[in-house]
Length: 350
Image (cartoon, rainbow, N blue to C red):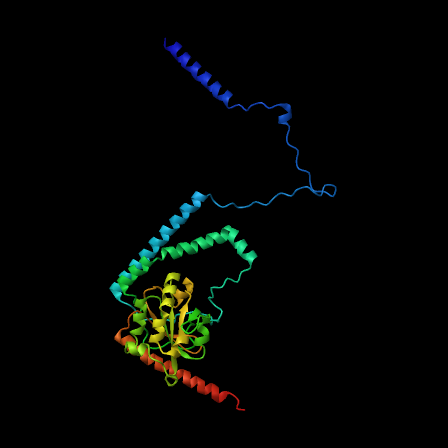
């Protein structure tokens, strides 16, 4: 009885195996189909029109994959910025703001045409960039970085640190070690014609006040003795000039600032209208190079005649920073006057 059962099971398994093998067998083809396809003819003199093999092209990933990766990059960038802000706030709370011990700015001298918003590409270049997958990926990364650095992160950072990233140095930087102030491009309070800050800074000692919000304007005015002194006219005998650079971070803020420009004209002396700039924002790399990392913070710089940053401060002024500002400004002005005397004495007389 056991033998018959075993034989029936083995027969069933054998028959199923045969069925599987038969199912996996290739379907026989007809004689005409079994012939191999003829190889393409080689390009010869008698057959010059033979097509050449097309190069391999890399296709972009599917739409769903691209959208998902973009959203994931945005979340990762936002989390990274929030973690960095928390770490910085924790460090400043434990150790306090440290003195600025190294020069800040650009390595190369600025030019009046730098950082202009004009697009100098030709139509063909614009079209090529528009249809280029690599250019679109680069642009997407830029937009993701801008979206990740939102108002909430700057506000979150400002509430914890009050914008005090560092303490102003006690002495100004040496001329051979100092770095350059980048060029800002925009309009002035006196005219709607486009102008560059480099042309205004060249050849003169300047106190540059840089801010984007009303809180930043209060910060930069705190380095002067009073609010009246901050907006007062600067005489030529003082040896320096005051340059205001307001950088609206959005077009709406820029329109609002220009709409209420009549108030600023009433407040400031007429001699300073040509030195009050509504500038375009700098690229992130340049703004971070001069220490401008928060749009709610105001920044003050002492810039010499070569557009070099000799002293810098941020946020609301401390008492020691006010004293350092006055002392360093006098020192840079005195150095500039000595330099002018040397250049005038060395120039040949007619």
